Length: 305
Image (cartoon, rainbow, N blue to C red; front, side, top):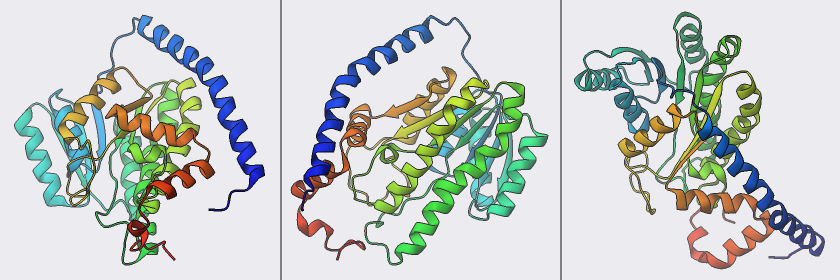
């Protein structure tokens, strides 16, 4: 790869600034954590919870977790039959929980938004969990890259925003409420193994981080969740390390939401790795990745030349 010396100098200055400023921001962050734990406010226990992607994976695990608290659950999913299975599982966990199901395809924006807006205006939702997402096990070599891109944008970006935005006005007016979005560890950077999926997740993360400050000042908490790969049907065939069980991650999210954490990540080593990718200048990272990755690994990729 040809390196532009001007960009290389700029990258060197950027990394030097990170080295100088990182300790300052670390001290500020530690002070904020200390002040938060001094706060004697009670933990938050949501009573009315809306969950998308509730028919499988982490969405289903979160439904089962909140069923134990006897919360009223509003479960969204594409399959009516699978929603009924999740409802039955929740009732089996705790017969006192009230479950309402909504069968709709999140990519059908008009119908989905209509149902979400109805919940936002007619129901007392105090926690929204956007868990619907999509990834293909063979996404490094999709048969139709543009179709896969449309799918990722429709579900991972538009689907998330269509889920949480209708609740924002009412929550801001009341000065309370929680929004939780499952972004994933690959939403914290890009490794180039699945540019379309990683791009969609990074896109929604940037938008959420921009919303976090204004929402917090209005009394509304926004939590971004960055789990590693989970053992689900969508990740079947994926070869990666530190795979987590959805039930384990649901426990971590539940605890974090009780504290109103802004970020929840697990496994932590993977989060550190993706965080490092975010601060390394792009030219440096791409050069290192090109040097480390075997050239044959990209030959079958749709973006190879």
